[in-house]
Image 1 (cartoon, rainbow, N blue to C red):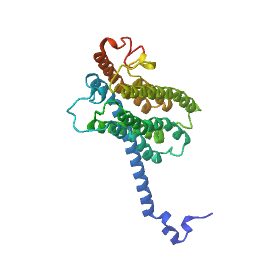
Image 2 (cartoon, rainbow, N blue to C red; image 1 turned 30 degrees about the horizontal axis):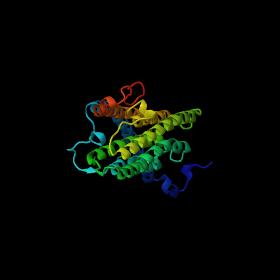
Image 3 (cartoon, helix red, strand yellow; image 1 turned 120 degrees about the vertical axis):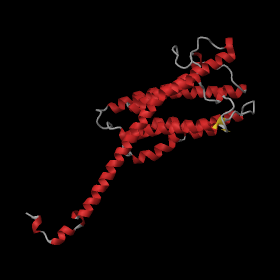
Image 4 (cartoon, rainbow, N blue to C red; image 1 turned 180 degrees about the horizontal axis):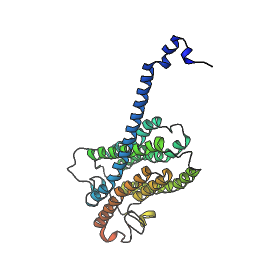
Length: 298
């Protein structure tokens, strides 16, 4: 048996046993624990802020519409082309996961990568493909007049999307703790939510395409007809709401549910405003039984 009091003097001078090394080690551990606590606090307060934004957003959009598209009006400062505006607003959804995922404890977990993929699929389309389709449609319109997108609104959209993407990506890559302890429920929730998500994405993309084609061919706004437009004025918004309901099921988290609620608080009043605009513009020619965004309900 080795007795440390019998060890030679130089044994106590080894770095592993030196008081300075132990002090540095404890300082590093304390620093890591502090940073982890700060990161956790920042995430929780960001999630809380996201929930608190929902009700004010809903109330504000019931009485006021952002001045772009059919609600465009002057007095909102410099404008930029709509395709560029959409790229700017949606870009955090692609950039932030690339930054945050390598920092998460689940970075190498295949389940985390699979779970994040539908989110990235949606926003790859919104960041790159959709702006290109807007540009192509605008360049082929009968009218050459292009309404600009207020820069301040693009910046606001950028910040909102950055907050949301931080919450979703950080949850999936770091704070979700039941990847391997949910008794196999992960795949049931994922595939169940994925079916809903893809259904909503299909509706959203179909409606966007129909609106772009209609506007390109007519050179302006006309009454959309056919398919989901027979039920609601804004099937593109309805599809997106369905998408993020599916995301909430897939993540089964406060982060995912918060995104779904905020999507509703943002898109439902905007759809109601669009519905009112169509009724005022087209009068008796607009179908009276058509709802704004939720078939048969709203």
